[in-house]
Every structure is written in structure tokens, then in C-alpha cells.
Length: 412
Image 1: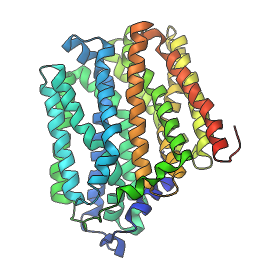
Image 2: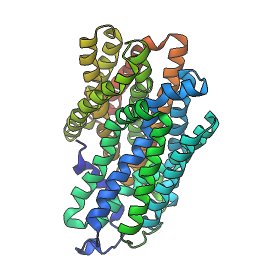
Image 3: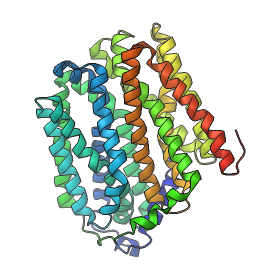
């Protein structure tokens, strides 16, 4: 599970200059239900980002694309988040939260419906850019809003509920989407996401109370954290880690279908197993990162490299492949909370912006990984993708002692 004690730093820093009824000890009416709806919304929103991975083969077949070219849809979404996320989050920091979340979910409903109706890949691309613009805004504002809704006595639990929705989407979004896609087609999956987004928008419109309008934050002051070389080094490390993860993970479905010869209807269940193991990885990562975030990153990145390389090496043996995928899944999901907490702790101030920047740069790694994975498939074939991803993970391992020395810490 994510280390929510560390993530509470984001909430405390972001809300100190704001006064709401919740901060005076009385949670707004329907606050608990609104927090639950935010958690479900988090699941829907983050699932929208990651679900494309499980649907790539079907989209590629329908539009006559190679799997590498279809993978550019992953890159498009990720690079959009990276380039626009922090700036957009800063620009809307003063917007009424109820109006903001309702608008974001209506945008997700529209964009998912657009993808479901797409007659060509360019419309799919547009339907992926629009929610990408909104994703970081949700990441950057949902936790502090949950804390305001719940009140000081219940703020920690509220934040944990929202991040549990995000974690659940990361772990189960792709396998559930793949299973649904196999049952009703990839268009049906996006129709379901559109319906869920619309439902959340309507429910929040009627349930979420109006909170005091947040104060406008000076983005320039917050951006001073970019002058900190250790913080920047930690952002670079996140980029390398996520590049390693998504060089292979983006094309995992194709790898299982074409190389491991897993029947198409069964691939979703393999991904579900990957996700179940990922729950344990999320819990392990949250506990590892509490004492030493850099050491936790080193260990998880090393295990990730071993898991990805072993999955390629042992792909002809179903039993050993299951074990290798389990190792990969543990490390893969552990690195989400590890990277988020590590970067936030590297910032002397503005933890909320630090967390948003990490999400943006991680998405840069996701996009870069999809590109590298696509090039690997074109040049070497999908069977070798795990080795390339593992090599990138080793680069992340080697960066850790360098960053430790920068901060005057012991080199691992």
C-alpha cells in the first residue's frame, strides 16, 4: 500500500493557506460520500490512462497499424501529461473544486465516447489528448480536496481512500479493461469508461458540497524547487525508472499473445494475476520507502530488471514464466509509491507541486518507454523487449549511488 503518511505532506502544505468549514472541525454535509466518489473517480480517470495498454492489439488490428505504431497512442497521452500537467495544475489552483472535478469528469466522459466512436486513428488520438490534459490537474488537487471534505480528524483516511482508487486503477485497470475488451471489444471498453465518468460527474454535482474557493497560488514561487539539483536528479531518476517499466509493460499483451502463445481470451486473466501480485508490490513499496527512498528505489529497480529479463528468458516455460511475471509485477507496482514519495521528500517545500512534477516526468518516462519498446520490436522483435527494458532498469540502479553522493548520503 502507498505510504500515506508521506503523502499527507502534500495535503498539509497545500491547505495551510486555506480556510474551510472542514478545517474548523465540522466536515461538510455528505463529505464522506463525496470522498468515496472522488476515490471512484480516481479509479476511472487513472484507468482511462493505462487501459490503452491492454487494448493496443485490438486497436492495431482494427486500424491496420503495427503494434509499434499503435504504441504511439501511449506516448501521446504520456507526453501530453508531462508537458502540460504542472502548468495547468498551477493555473486552475484557485478554481472552485466542485466545478473543477465535475468539469474534469465531463471531459473524460466526452473523450472516452469520442474514442469509442472513432472512425480513424486520428480521432482516437484526439480522444487521448483531451483527458491527458486533465489528468495531472486531478492528481494535483484530489488529495487536498478529500482532506478538506473529511475534516482534520479524518483527513488521513480520506487521502488514503483517494490514493487507493488511484492504486487500484494502476493494478487492475489494464487487466479488467483487457477482459472487458475481449468480451465486448475495445470500443465497448471506452463506452463503459465514458458512462462511468458521466455517472461520477453527475453524482459529484449533486453530492459534493461547495468548499471555500482556494487562494490563487504563485506558481513562480513554487517553481523554485527546480533550482534544487538533488530534486532535479530525483526527477531524472523517475524518468529512467518509468522508461524501463513501460518499455516492456506497454507491449506485455503482445508479448503474451505472440511469443508466449497465450490464447487471446486468456490474456486478461494473466494480466489480472500480474495485478493481484501488484497489490502486494504496492504494499511492500509503501513500507520500503518510509526509511530510505533511494535504497528502496535501488532494490525495486534491480528486482524489476531481473523480473523483466527473466520473463523474456523463460517465456517458453509457462510455470517459470508465471514466477518471472510475479517478480516483475511486485517491483513494477512497488515503484509507483516509491518514486512519488522519494521525489516529494526531495523537495524542501511545495510538496504538492513536487508530486505533480513527478507524475508529469513519470509520464515522460512512460511515453519514452513506449517509443523505445516500439523501436525494439521493429529492430529486434517483441521477444527481446524484456532485455532492453532490463538494461534501462540497470541504468536506474546505477544512478542511485550518484544521487546519494549528491545529497551527502552513503553510496549504496
